[in-house]
Length: 151
Image (cartoon, rainbow, N blue to C red; front, side, top):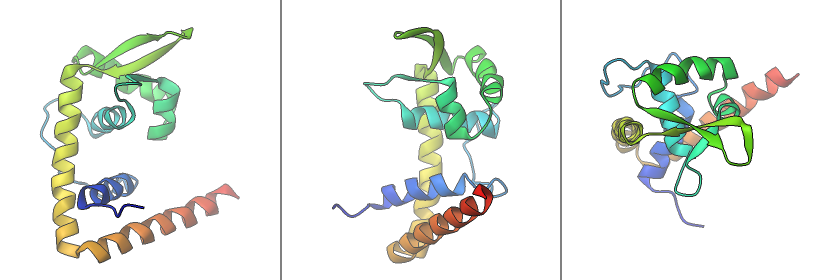
């Protein structure tokens, strides 16, 4: 199995740190977007590719851990500003899929690049071994707390 690179580690750290809402990472200044809108754009970018160009509101809901109504609340202004588009599901006309426009893709890539730059600085500061330990321990802590709320 291939060892993770620093970029892979920063991706892991980003995934972990977004689960700590009080920790504010420096985000690119995109006028008119909230933190939740940034996160939705990034979630879309990280979950679409050439084969899967859009995802359902329920998938976004699960990924962001908010209600479908909350997702709709985020989607509407992003669509109005030209960041996302609604597409029909080719398999089920009742389902609407959400995809990124070119503007949305470029914006999400810029946000991801800014966060990766910050987290690469953290990885460089901590060193590779401590960064791996941090990711491992944060994952264990999240598993612990998740198990506490299951009961």
